[in-house]
Image (cartoon, rainbow, N blue to C red; front, top):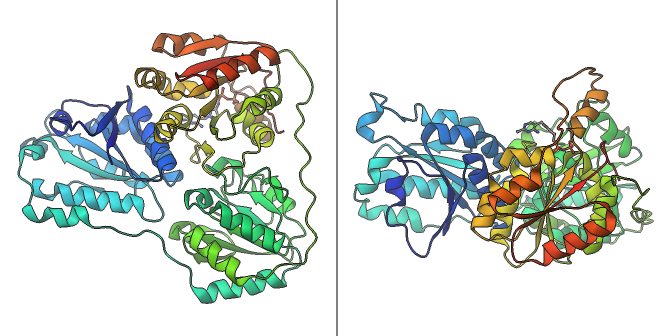
Length: 515
Ligand SMILES: Cc1ncc(C[n+]2csc(CCOP(=O)(O)OP(=O)(O)O)c2C)c(N)n1
């Protein structure tokens, strides 16, 4: 861990004193951005990542992003400065009162060391906690006078130990599952985000091909990463996110195998039976909480990669008919302004083989997935928690962790606002993300939800004249406003090829785009 994201205050300065030359500090101008960058970096590097926040108000600003990091299963070590120990009991100014309680529901562990000498061990424990399944943020509050104390000479043991995170499945459970798969007449695989995090793409493909399984991606709102190549002939699309429609989509299946996903990240509430008639469900997850809270189905608790490898070794070649592949994506009708579908179709034409998408354009999520059909591991990051702000900030972290792969961050102009100061960090640190902003002058997805929820007359859903390109320019990110397919094609090609962060803003027709 040699990269620290953060926003400093007086309570953090002692920690940053004599900052080592072989570490790098990446400044976020607001804590939600610092945490979002750390989240993206942690996911794209696969390594625990440090973010340092300013005592109570800084932690408060970061909370939405800590919530997102938890939903993303992102191994983030969150530290925050604290008043000097002699000041805490009298609650002097800037004391982080109940420091460990505030973040509690959004982290796996929150702690303030009882003695200065315990700081190294507390940090080591937090890093291991964040890195073990299910991965997620851990928090340590650090009184600012601890940094001048001598560490316990024995603390090196705590810091140097390793904890191998992968747990294998029960072989008997895998054998039973293999028998169920072999015996099923119409099984299906639902691939979730933790397949990507576990590095298990090839294993998921091997299982699907061997068993001729049609594959769906787990529902988009909670599917922060892709668990299966979306251009593969067995890929059948993204499951809808609500109870009734999931069951409708899976009707006729007798065995539903879910790997690396909660069952399921439902939203909105559209009731219905949890399973189609005659179907049973088995989920494989490394998260005991996901295992416990699933409303139906059996669970095997294990690392998705190890479980998939064990299963592939156990199942036979199936003799089933392969499903029809999805039809080729169509760009749809020309219009002025363009549809989001046409925008993503244009992006697909210029999108590099090794490109990465970080997505936060709520009303065009499914259109982007369908048009790009990303088919390489580690190519897609989406805020699984649903809190806006992950996209812009996370993209900067992803690009810093993957400097050799071009990152395209696709944003709605509303979503941009939750992490807008991230533009400064991208410019100041020369992080060459391409930002593509879809400008529809409204919160399109909320209008769509209003229809579903039969809400009429809700205020606050329009965004007239929100000048993202001009604001990004002011932060130092070179920006262009383009219109139509040719201009967009040309601007995206230039921005993706550039070694600097650049932004392309394009007006789009409002409304939900599903394809
Ligand atoms: C932190 C946070 N606040 C509010 C919301 C509610 N919300 C969900 S989508 C959305 C609108 C996003 O607008 P925009 O990025 O322009 O995308 P569009 O819906 O137009 O595609 C809002 C406000 C949220 N998800 N997260």
